[in-house]
Image 1: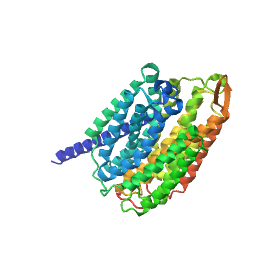
Image 2: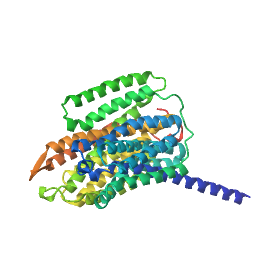
Image 3: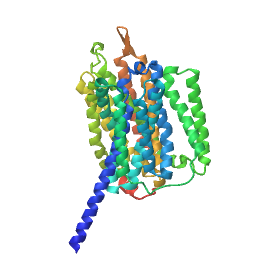
Image 4: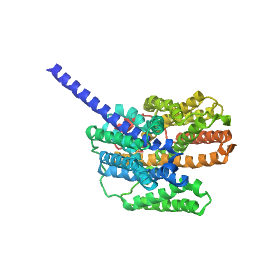
Amino acid sequence: MSATSLTGHEKGSATGSSRTRGVIAVLCIAGILVALMQTLVLPLVSELPVLLHTSASNASWVFTSTLLAGAVATPVITRLADMYGKRRMLLLSLTLLIVGSLVCALSESLVPMVIGRALQGFGIGVIPLGISIMRDELPPERLGAAMALMSSSMGIGGALGLPAAAAVAQYVHWHVLFWASGGLALVVLALVIVLVPESPVRSGGRFDLVGAFGLCTGLICLLLGVSKGGDWGWTSGVTLGLLGAAVLVLLVWGWYELRAREPLVDLRTTARRQVLMTNLASVVVGFAMYAQALVIPQLLQLPTATGYGLGQSMLAAGLCLLPGGLVMVLVSSLSARISAARGPRASLVTGCLVIVCGYAMGLGMTREVWQIMVISAVISAGIAFTYAAMPALIMSVVPTSETAAANGLNSLMRSIGTSTASAVIGVVLSHMIVHLGPSSLPSMAGFRTSFVIGGGAALLAALLALAIPRRRTGVAPVLAGGNATG
């Protein structure tokens, strides 16, 4: 009798373990897919004006539309997820991503391409939604490692996606990129329907339409000014007007949210020291992460005639960055173990310092391809530590009913950091140049300056992380307790 009971218990445990692995795998694949969408058009940067029959300035909207849509959608979708169901919003995000891929695959001109890329941008919310589902569905002993891997999926997908996208763009028609991405998204959608359950944790209530409109307006003004300032001129009336409007709108929005009965973003929870410092660190970590993504591919692809370029093709450059993605897979589990033993604050500080070391190596190790690969791998390892730690820090103090919204806001902070990095590093590299024949190319001094800026950003993130209160317990016990308190 006892043997029969034991066998049944073992079967139940095995089934539960298999189900848990399935949920983790599907959510991580969904996160990697979203990252693939972000890198999808990078191999086409120089060709987009010709392919879409437009100017280079107009073609940049292919990237800007995705950024703006993701920034606007993430806080709205994650708040709706807390209210009406995280799986439901995950399916909606994936559906919009599929529709966007279809529109891009059929595009031959700028406007439909921009619309399609904007729809793809709605998929950016998949990662914070996935982390939130993990908190609700996984046993505490599996949560730390799963959450670390999910958090790192953006970097993993970027590292894996660039060489794949470059190969497709180089050898087949560029529309295949979007047909393939749409097909993959459709497979992931089906897997979510079959394997991922709907979370029973919901906050209910009334959606804050005024707060959503105010936040979206402020973010559009801010990110549009930051991302297009280089094209329009940083002292132009349009750029300064947008940035000024962003400050004004966001201040009014904050005033309103503090007085709203059911706010879009609970600013009182966000103002807790642990959440506030983590979000500030996220902005700077996002900056540090994206700085190397702008610099390293250019160093690899610049012609050897410059004296410092390594003359690699887009495909070869993408393959050189591939080890960085593999390192992130390995390091994410290590970060989870450190977080469990010493707390996620220790993982965040460690990751920031590793990124600083990677940028410091870049000041003297750029003459060989293998050296660039080592730099990329070191910085990627640091990013894996930081991306794994930040959601753990956030979720250890926010109520379970606000998990998705809190993770969505943290993801938004990283997006603001990457947008700022694009603007700052773009200015540095466009002003510190050398002339090679008729072409003006970024100088080695510009690249070194960019490395210093990226390393400085990572060091600032480490200092912000040190301001986060210490906790004696690891992430799993804290998260297992349900509605944690500060």
